[in-house]
Length: 75
Length: 154
Image (cartoon, rainbow over all chains, first blue to last red; front, side, top):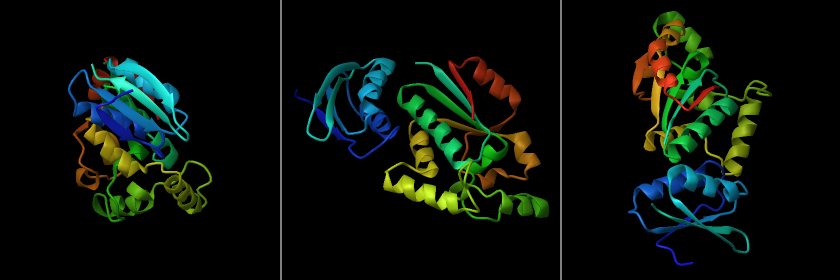
């Protein structure tokens, strides 16, 4: 999936990935795609939960070798 | 997006982390978050260093009730050994310390309020604390909490 911004939160734990995601979201316009790289297990549920809570659109995830790429469209 | 209101009563490292994690997480999820620090919870928002407090008794008390980076875990502190170990483990596992989480919380717009009554009881002055948004009483807490979707006492 193509993205407008890549955010690397590998090695971070709760609540850091979500905090970084929120900070990034504030800098962006609507309709852009954020790609978050995370390797903490909590992100699997936390990223979609954050999207639902903030009204952004969760587009899915793609596993890589040691981490997962999460995609969200800003709304 | 809702509102969260959290009373920080404990001054323990682990409990402060729990409160600050929920606060930053809720703020990151778009909630309007207020942290009320009272009694030992004032230690969480104290500046570093020992010589704080109002008058001689306040100084004596606040040498014992040190805050900032000096707060230790609620269990197994063992005269600071537990604190030292836990902080080392946190650093190694890339978990943020309370002072770093406070910075994040402020950046995300979390409101920090301090309880005036407990500040008086414990001889804590406003200048002993990190910059707080206000020093308030219980009516402010009730007003905030009655509008909140999440209320916690930690």
